[in-house]
Image 1 (cartoon, rainbow, N blue to C red):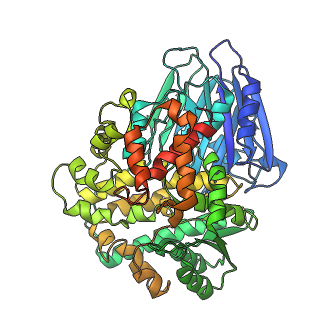
Image 2: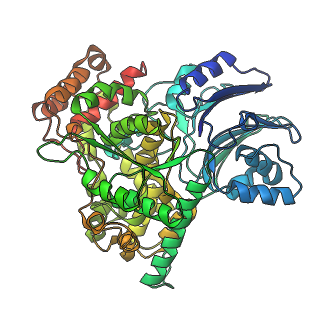
Image 3: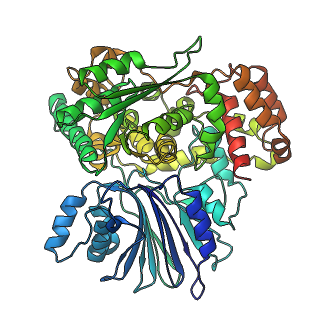
Length: 592
């Protein structure tokens, strides 16, 4: 797990090595163990390393394969690298390291751009071919690892720069920082998600999940989608057979994420079904990881911790368990610090929770497993049954239960220069058309898994853990498990009030109280029910001279939220005032 960056100059020009230095400095928290850089003609690569596999100097990056004339900067983990190494050795390739980085180099030498189809894991990498002068960028199927790059259609000779975070690209300079109107609409209507390729800035794009970008020596680009979700249901298995298959697939996903590491691995144990099941399956695989739980102060409407559910799981499996309780004054004090680590503005209240938890966890381990993706892959959220019962077109059934604001409210929220078309409805309609399958809910789950969670919970966990040099692995987003789950009839996901198949697998492995409890979330109540010093914090941000000069939000809309800050919630129960405040603060922190 690392941070990568690079600069590809136009033919005949040279990269800006000073910009590479600044980008690497901005990525230092993603890779605190080592740094390296490489340049060749128009190409320069930078790398910050978090040592997880092959801790020796043989694993250092950028890694050069002199035999094949290749250079690689890689972020992520390839879980099937031992099997690939064996296969590639049989094809005549020689290895000098024991980690996964060199496996990517040899895989590219053997299969070219198709190497990505052989990789199982999470990855974002840049591979430079010294012989042909071509650059190959790739991102894993579910977008677990980020990859941002600059785009300037008005200047064909503008350099292409890329990095593991948007702020790192800004540190390199020369980025068009005007708002992307499509992304702005997505940000405030689509539950805080800005799906790739857009970002909030016109000059920055994200490589889409399951995609690669090849740029040849003449500058010609070829963008290719190598993986796509197929939500076509299979009807050849009964409920018991599906349970056996999902259990086996999940056990394999958990085991491969525990086994592939040269450092200790833990589990973020929230007290919910998903993380509890990971601990149970780790035990089934013969491993007892350390476990970590965080809690916050209660509010009258909501409890701030789930220790009563996480403690029995830790006790049952006799894990070395760590509990952390964070008082509200510390949450408020650390909020700006957590927001500064966001690659893009993120609205979910648990971003700060993951940030504070990761700080403590990183003192004990360098790798953790987390339960992200289970709700989206296996139908755990309350809005899925509501969508199933609704009538109308795909978008008519989806929008009333998911969109944070409809288009009319968005138009009331922003001032005239920022108003425009209903970009979000158009995007979601297009995404639905791209997912194969007839069952509506399976297609919704496919859309959520392949597009929406990439830029919400998945990105959130990557940003907040990597801020402390901690690698997060997400077994529920194992691409083989996702492919299997998308074929399973939706009824097995939605029954038992959601995630029925996982509840059946968990029965007897996880305490009944955890399985039968109402669906829980990672609560930070003070960011949902905005009062006292948290209200003053948000009011000051939105009233600041910088916010006023920006003129993005309509004053009447802001004032309405300020009058009743703990009464204005989105359909998914987020505080609307928090959305505006965190967005504005992120812009200010990045000097935008």
